Length: 583
Image (cartoon, rainbow, N blue to C red; front, side):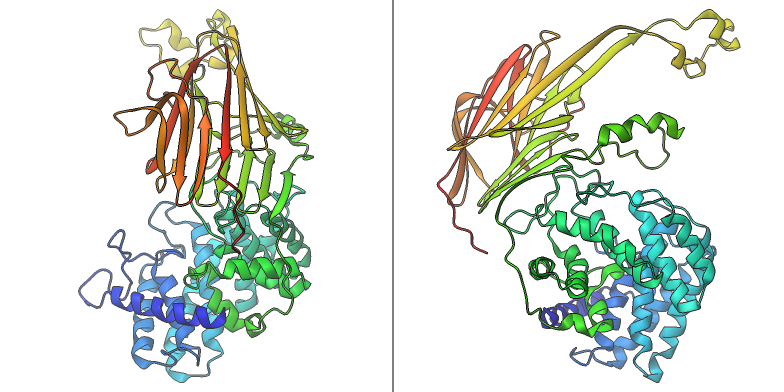
């Protein structure tokens, strides 16, 4: 693993060198150009600090071909000067994609930059001093924004705590500890089964994990490792056989996207060593197989391994990871009780520049049998997803015109051979506002809609739409049994989202202008390589090619089943013969 990281870091060094702007007349002089935008940013992902971490790790490592390379050192100095010039006067940075003058995005850079500083400081190499001076100056300038700055999202709090911990360590700054304590006083946003608020297995769960590991060490708060352990234990069951993370129910931008285990390498490796946990060691090795480069500035694995050389040692004990299981995550979590307390919180369900994440703790079932991996989920557009060898059924989603868009399943009940999912939606109309509650503008020539006290309207003619789905395991595969009754003649659409890499065959399909398929009937087979699944239950009960507010994904093969209420719709999914686990 260590040798692999050294080699990939050297390749990353070369890529960064080729993208550094060397024209003194350019506004980006010294920065490394992000190829997707043509701009040199100061952020922790596509920005110059990430290349600086690659370069610094190479310069400090005798195993690198760039060890103490003076030309690379000159490049690093130019980059450090560029970063200083692009730091705002308040000490913050603007990452480029959004979040201008952003305390949390500055914190990401602080976490990466501080570790780079610590690594370079160990070198006892005089030519390095100007670079160290620049990095330290950048970090010192961030102190005001770190001591006063806020956040948008739950995970940002733990990034800020890690950054404050590093500033405390470097500058003996007690105020940083006090500010971190204010964030930590809000408590850990995690369920007993290990799920963070944002349900973001592909991105932000790993962020919370590594940042709390740093905070635990730097702030002398070992109890902060407990939620990390919970999440890492949960993640054992949230990886497909290929190493792809389960992102089908995320509350963030990784929803439905392909992510691998690489962001979890450091959390698993650090806690495997700290706890002597053989399962964590096995997961660290699996995550390490996905590491194509050391990682972005804030989570550069090679920098951490050079700072903690003991992590470079091969783990003697690696436990076999489970490949046959059935588990409900958050099945015992008292989610409804927490939701009932929302009114007393006083925010009336409103939050700026973020979201409430009321899907936090919604139950998710994970079923694994060798190379077949199934997810049954609630509170998201998709309620079912399946991997079978190379076959990817990315999502099964139910949409309706009742409250136009996807119908999320809200409750999950375990059955003897599967799961019962139920969902309910309400929609009504609103009466006139009582005369004694009307504003003065209502009596004038102009009465703006937005000045009316809409909260005073009473509901009339409210309708309730209930659906339920039984997800049942059978000898040949799975059965989806959906039903819904009133109101009558609601147009429904069931969408099956397959990976673009496979092929559809058989079935009576009608292609839409958007490149999707209306499935009229017949057995439908989806094949990828030697693996396949076969579905029955197609219907063309109406001709709508989409449902308003239910956006279908791009770059996928989408098959649609159309029907009307009342309905009792059964879909059978048969799987190709059993597969042999290759890991």
